Image 1 (tube, rainbow, N blue to C red):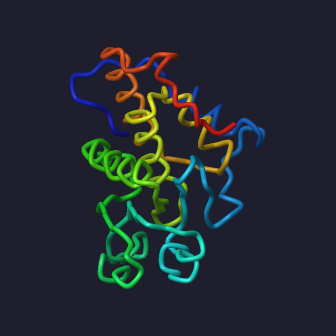
Image 2: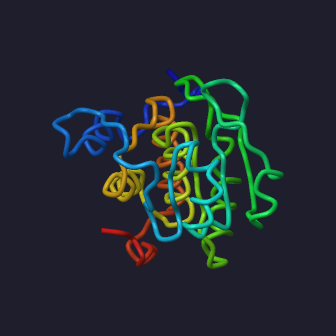
Length: 199
């Protein structure tokens, strides 16, 4: 399992996040009911199939796409900016694998900036991986923490109310470490909570 070198255990626990993720399923992790869900205003999480459907992207009014699983293996989604050129969609991709020992944290800041750019410009962004449950969910949670000043628990609750997600435990632990870092920097406060939080 992923663990930061020289770091003590984070203040939030995997068990705590698992409880939030399975609050309405009796402790069971469920696959998403839908191909895509709008989990925050202007921010949609989806699977790879939705990301490859130009007609669906057009119907949803997507202006930006963030592929969190770029690659050619069966566990990745092989897309690039050329595919979306005729739609006028801005594209960004990271080559992440859905494994507990994969360090996703170096991508948190740059992907959060890309998502924020899309939303603040009045656009709609599709954040996706292969299934829309782990890599894309973890990146979305990091965005809500970094840009919307949500704790990891608040971010997980916000997304989970709209979509069944299941980031792997390595990603969840990385989000716990991010939570600790932001807590120490006084990043979270009631006055900073975004008023558009979906309930």
